[in-house]
Image (cartoon, rainbow, N blue to C red; front, side):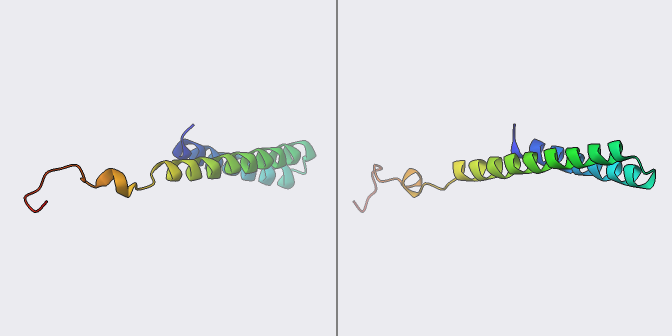
Length: 78
């Protein structure tokens, strides 16, 4: 899964966790509050996957100076 898609999932899970926690605490429903906490823990795990995906995508875009030079070309001054 791409880093952009994982980022959307993290944001969505945090919003769902906040809504569930708010409803659970305002209505004094421990099960809903606990479910919100569980969703938050899943969001933390997805956040870790997102950070790893960002690191891997950035590592794949490393600029290779040797690939950009034209050492085999013929020029008049060589």
